[in-house]
Image 1 (cartoon, rainbow, N blue to C red):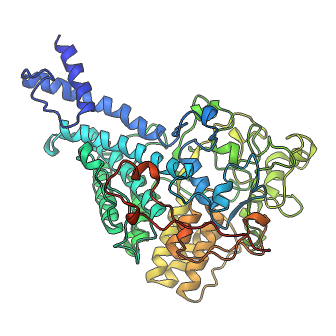
Image 2 (image 1 turned 90 degrees about the vertical axis):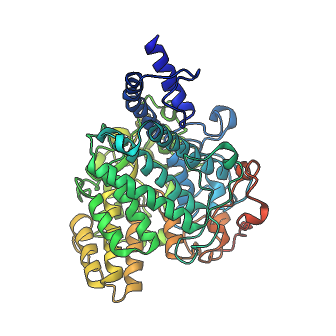
Image 3 (image 1 turned 90 degrees about the horizontal axis):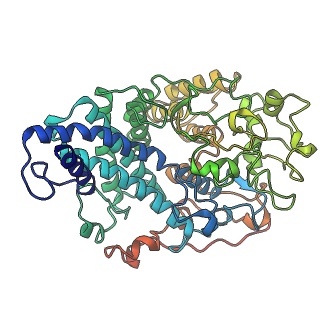
Length: 547
């Protein structure tokens, strides 16, 4: 009976985090020994919840079963990265009219409205993930006052707090312009572990500054707990102090805290190293165990997104998969993701990254290096049916296990790589000391990407543009491009590029309403504190112009 009551109470703790641990659910009083027994069981149960934070970034069917809804973009955070990148100027898709390109709405800026299913998808993914973090925090807080927290419990707290900070950092950049200059603007509702259901249903948009204050508070505590109470993580999906430092580096960069951003970025790199030139001279970026990855989504063949065959990131982004909307398409319905040809032309021929995309003759040294000259162009010889590459298609992202035409789309997804941190460190350093920033940038690029590289920036503006260029190349396809445009207050330019006619627009000005999303109807319909007047401006999709 004692064990049954303990289990019953443990379950109730997860339903109502604020329950009184002195009493059973039916009201009778517990002894201290019984309380201690229940509390001792909670960390292991929390570990299960923390696993939910990992899987919550790789969830299938946020909007319902994709087989029923037809929403084959509904495969978690990697899909959101695709949404962000397809709405910029660096990633294009030749097919912007029919079928297999599931990101036409982003390429044409048609998804900024409150009723967009893509908008709902983004919102629900982050807030669902955030709820899991809040549930962990609430349960731990109820069971473990600060003076009762063991090293393991503090580590669990740190993981949950960093997860929540990640969600808010993504949300605030999606639904409002960048921090600097917009501190008082409407951000997103802050849903915290201490709130009641009634409070959640009457929850106004916090200001941008308030959201960032919450992010920094969560990260500061997370870093303290994780750094002082490290554990051996099971895989790269688990949050560590280095991950939290990386998230705080991103946040400090957005807030203009240059010295702090540089310091945090350097700390995030502990235990990691960049990919070598040799390692990225072939299609790569599919294995979280690589030394470059600080944090990633670990995907296995047993995951729901993989079992679907085509409702996963590789299906939409990998040009070498044996099962996907890229390679399985017909000759007239292709959905390969290509780089902006003007951007590609700016990459030095001595830079190993130039081969991450085929050239205008459909050649890439990366394909030859990986598969040999005789096999590098199997797609042109019927390997993928009638589908053939078009110029500038990416071969950056390799197939599962590096095996061309592998139909098992179980590739991992990068959430944070050491290369991003090195670029943050270089930029933040250069903001205060241009010469020192250039030195750090050259050390990375010359050492790992282009042995002949020299940073020719003569002033800060030129240096920031060079950092942006390096980020556009290094992080292409990983979900950073839209946020970089917003942070740096850059326009989007597609004229004179390989964007198709229906997606070629006059330059979209920096901080155009087209660059952020409106709070979706799924939130405004239930949250009484967000009225139409509180929402962002609904941007009209642009009209194509002659290229």
